[in-house]
Image (cartoon, rainbow, N blue to C red; front, side):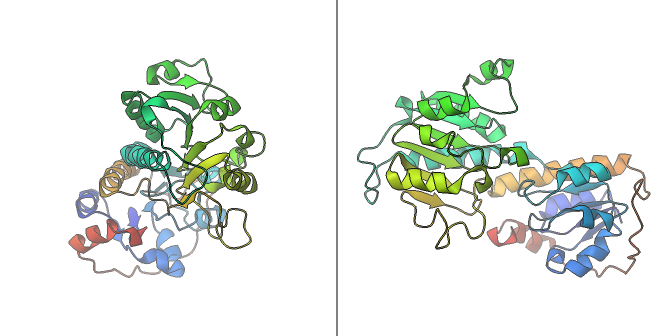
Amino acid sequence: MDLLVAEPLEAEVLHWLQTRHEVHYAPRLADDRKRLAEALAQARAVMLPAQVPVNNRMLARAPSLRAIGRIVGGQESMDLDACARAGVAVLRSPEATAPAEAEFMLGALLSLLRPNLLAPHRIVGRELAHCTVGLVGMGPGARRLATVLQALGTQVRGYDPALHASGELWQHWGVQPVGLRELFEQSDAVCLHLPVYSRYVGLLGDRVLPWCKPGQVLVSVSPIELFDEAVLADLLNSGRLAGAWLDSVAPGTLTPGQPLHGAVGLQTTPRLASYTREARLRSAWGVARQIHDVLRRAPDTVRDGARHAGLHAPLLRERVNPAASAASAASPASR
């Protein structure tokens, strides 16, 4: 089998792939881990939903696997080091979600900067044209947001641990590079668009957040692991942070007894920033084309160093209406 598609996929993208490769389409297969393992043992490439973990154990059971495509979600459930060691390419299309993420962050900023009658710490609203906004992480969505903010007259500061402050890209983007603490000190609002690697866990803790400008608002489409939750909760409850909108919180983060439970001025959404019909379609096409390129180049053999999983059970074909599958792909439940 060339390609296993184990999540709902838009009909036109699926048809394009089926005319070029041997495709097994099983959009509900992720719910049956045993059958999923059997199918992975026979696949050269796979499209997997974000809830399926990718680790050494999974890769060991897929000796012919050359590429893993992810349409929605990031690398939170993927062991990228294990994929690199195994020689398995991780294929995503981050540019595809940039417009959706920029719109989401802009909308969240506008909402937080307006008065909230239920929050005692904000009396009067602010206009973005008279604000300084700091961007932490200069991914595609943040760069697009910077362009929109500049059109509104906003001053934009930026920090990215992977970019040197003297780099030419900052000038190209029209963003002033500053240190992380300086960014929080100077900004009326901060937007986070930084992926989480192990070295970034807890980056926003007591060395940075307590220095935030009084009355600052914060929008994050990054995983909650970037924050020291206790420090963030203290700043919200004290009113130094006027509000925060987190689009990605781990299960249990808001349960009673946790630092952010009942935090004043906190809003959360379940990873909606990049989830639009248009973004998903762009991402599906981007990942599909990358998989096609990998399958054209990669040898149809077991990877070097991979062991045979010994799973050769026949695949159970799922009868799927392509139109229905496209509708399922556009539904939030399919995430």
